[in-house]
Amino acid sequence: MGRRRVPQALTPRALPRFFVPPATLQTRTLPDAVAHQVSRVLRLGMGDWICLLDGVGGVYLAQLGESGRIESLQPSALATELPFAVTVLQAMARPEKAETAIRLCVQAGARAIWLAPSERSVAQLEPAKQQSRESRWQRIAQEEAELACRARSPEVRVLSDWAQAFAGLPRPVFVLDEWEGATPLKQRARRMPMPDALSLVVGPEGGFSPDERAWMTSQPETYAVSLGARVLRTEHAACYALAQLAALWE
Ligand code: SAM
Image (tube, rainbow, N blue to C red):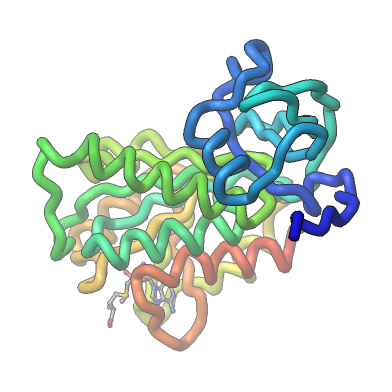
């Protein structure tokens, strides 16, 4: 029996979503992996619609033509990005924890996720593996962004030097600090107008060293902030902070 065709609601949220290289929108030919997913897995064909995203906010409704061709392309929009761009600097953790952190940060709206080894990072990444790990984690972030109906695909970077990564962060920087006495993030954020961009810095499973903490909080526009009395796992902390900021400013 043929597939029962249910009329598709022509909105980005209702359609299968794919991030594609911007060139796809010129050549109007789907990348092989997307064409395979569309025809073989989703069993969509001529006349059906999908949503294509260029990764930096461009959203399009695309009607399928013959074998992976795009018959027509209509500009659309998705209002799912946070009104402030958040870069997360996540201390390198074991791969499964790093992947959880990436997925949660994408779901919570991070614009970029950088990973670098801090003094107490248990997981050290061999330089030879850095590129392949970054490519894998970028794919994971992109998949998560498609599921989350994000208009953008967050950038993932794997860096080798903590101080260098920290220096490149957009200001203001909030160093997530589980030690007693740090100002609550909500309290610190309430004292300032919503910035266009900000950064969140998360320590590894073993936390930051005292020297690290002292060095970071001596940097300009950098604040040690608490997320509350409970100690969170390294892979959950940035998402928890993003949720607090979204509750305040979104
Ligand atoms: N010192 C922690 C402990 O006693 O288990 C270990 C560090 S915690 C597992 C990992 C990181 O998550 C911390 O370095 C911090 O960046 C962040 N974090 C966890 N709980 C937090 C909280 N309540 N407030 C702010 N940051 C927190």
